[in-house]
Length: 131
Image 1: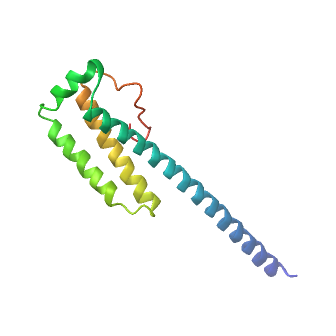
Image 2: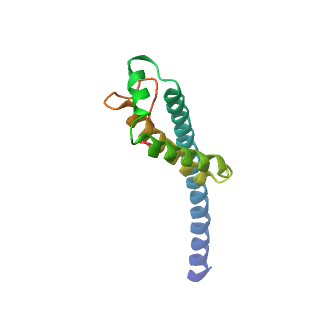
Image 3: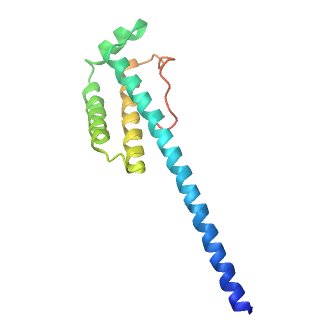
């Protein structure tokens, strides 16, 4: 076998290995994106349910925040993000991930605004993607 044939064989093997590695990397990235999306969904659900029915010492602060000037803008942003999340194609993992992260960021912004100087309750975990 000549040097050119050996070079072509090596190039073919390298392309095959690169394709396998790229496929494995893509599946790992998809799994990670899906996990982040599910964490953001869990946070959004917790935040919205807390805002709908606040409990404890923070309740009056949240109720007063609903009458403050910035509430409507943040609430509309959350509703718009929620509408995008509802309309997203769940087969496209990256579009689903982007919609979930945007919804979680909007929910966090509204929750922080509603709580004012209070910290986010311990039972609500904010994912890193929404922070």
